[in-house]
Length: 542
Image (cartoon, rainbow, N blue to C red; front, side, top):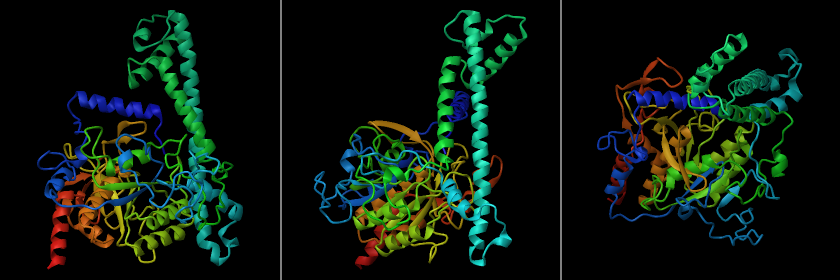
């Protein structure tokens, strides 16, 4: 879920205040590629690893990015985008007979044949609530057949969660709307009273009146502006609040909207999970927000050494663009089919920076993961940003409940920080010493953004592609490694922070040993991984 504009401004103002006091350090833009010893930041030693690889040959590795869409025309990405060798562009024919027409750079599973694209979709809890309410609304446990009792218990949880979230969203919308009306009222009053075009803290400080309403409004508006930005006018504040209101309204309409159906755009049969060919070939996702996927792709493979923007972790990589993640929750059908597409079309690594709390068609996703496993494809997945222990909580898909569990081709990634002070972990990151495999940089990550721009972003969504990039580096130079060996190397070569205590994610004052937050107990390290891969490769040759 997105943070509202004003909340983000408050956070930035707070951070700015800390920075002015010298309490907050700003890391280098490329910190995630730097070395902990040489550069004094908690990076993964990418540049140091490439020094070790000098003179060695590498092979092209295809990395699939299942995400919101990718700006494949970006100056720092256009040269690393995968092109399907078996497809003739825009001839309206499925030249390679893979079930997808004109899939030149990948596929968009949330697009329509008429060129429209899904931007917003509902949350899975909303969709699940709608499906299960038709079956269980008004019933009690004693009314339920034995075979349906487990599903009924799930329904009770879904019902409670949905109704609480929906009520909260409606309440926030009403409260925010009331705040906007109050600000607009006082803005007009003070513009007229002071005969000015805009009202700021400075304007308000000049007001002298015995009128109780004016005095109340002066104090109220001054407090609001001072908490955000003393230079901001009430007009500017109203613009931002109205943006928030539009987002909240959209949340009610789309995220929790029981009548909204994004699949009308796609035009598929939602019940036919194995359906192929639905969607379109617009992997950019024109008309929608593709920031997330563009940022993720750049972390993995933004062109290295071209002197512009940023350098991705891996070189000699092709990014296969698979659009399956809307502004809302991804659907199991699209995730599973995107995995299968990636495997069938040559991807050796798949990055999946998404997750959700419910997965109605989980088995179909697991079957796709098993399929990838059988073909030796490594899947790298973001652990989520709820500050939760996902040994207990759910963040689907995961490898906890598969037929075998703990797949050899699955890596679950938490987010680490650059190490200013004692901040070694993202405060938002999910964790779990049974479920999360390792940590990777995921705070203040600078990467590609739409329309040839670059931005910072944070989340396990950023940590996952750092890991995928290191895996691609290894596979490029050591192509004989299989998915299981890749995972073994990445897990065994982590930089451990034994004895280092950190603030437990999701809390303000609880301390925990960093080593207890994941199975490996450490942060991925490309340099050590390359050394281990070299040793393993030499052992094979003997």
